[in-house]
Image (tube, rainbow, N blue to C red; front, side, top):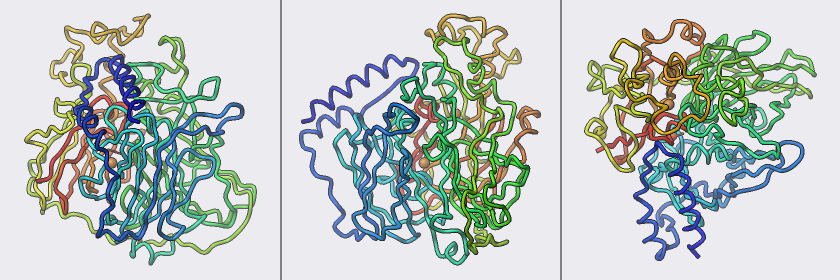
Length: 564
Ligand code: C2O
Ligand code: CU
Ligand code: CU
């Protein structure tokens, strides 16, 4: 019975090897094999009384997305075993989802069944859960196996999400369609009169590229695409190509934006110039709504946006667009002109202007939801309680020797360095630094290009080397944004240091960051660093922190930290 899966695994290994550059270590292979003969039915916790019990099956399906042939996608299919039926919402016709709705204090059991042709594991992004339920890459299960999650919801009201987390395959698995939302509510939020039901709307923003046969295309630029991260040539909203939300004039909405893209960054603005009203980020509501001229949303980030259609007539159309910021050259956009790279399809350049979604008020209605001036009580961490406020732990995210590294290291399944060990019960400040090129302390701007050029190192680029002239590509490669995510905690962002950020870039993005509230991911533009403060509470164990550019993560820009 196990045999077919072994074959798949071998195939995958061969492919991973061909991908080069990355040292892929799969120490769990052997343990999987030895376990496979004795695979027991996963045990349900005997003393665990779930309020919500559901099955979540990852499976390949054919879905009608574009006109013509169906698209092969990977989806999570949810089935409620116990709980009120609002707890599970399925987004019809979409590979995105499901939407799981829980309350703080509830006990949740999720029976994850892996029916994909390869290993996977589910991670609950932003959630404060014990080590074994966090979806660590070492907990991957084989095709055909089940993993039981049983945890109490301890998080604040907020928009969380879930996605696969197998090392080296998170990018393609998410890209194939695996991502859902986990919405947490709590008493504090329940006392507010925020939109519910059809007026509380998921808006998952992703970019994809389809081939002529309507099949998803991932990283056809090969190794180059992996270095920069995937950029697609069109935007999908909630897994649909229409990029449209059919809403009702006269109503108010909560838009739960999730940047579910592998590596794309958005700078979102309403086309008519009205402000973007943000009232929640990642793991909390803000203390008060904020009006922005535009909102920066890096990969994995969530934002609650208020939309008021009360004075809009039926037929109103309102577009949320991406507005420009000067990062095109840095993230694969230079391949957008076509022909520069062998086989390259055009992409929507990062930082260019394009529509993201359109709100269409094609019906009328009314509701009396309100956006209060005061939302959540600010309960932020007092910086003076951090043991290391004046000497934060520093983690530098940078390229070194053709690899994406954190403090010079790359991923090892269970390895933890001394500086990655923290104490349960402690409050700490971490300084997350986008360090660009590792070795650019010499002034010739060469950095890692010195001596051994990247071209020499194993055929990253085929054909024309003209584009390398002046080392532009290399310089750009080191100047990449890194959206940094820490598992297990929600943190407060204390400050951003932007002195090394290109002033033109900073100028174009600076009004779009909402740093108040509780976050689990912080977008670091090239040259930027940020200090974040967090508490390690309740659970010991091994957790990961990483760049949420999924291609960077897959290439090893991920490390463990251990709570002892
Ligand atoms: Cu959403 Cu470790 O990731
Ligand atoms: Cu996460
Ligand atoms: Cu990165």
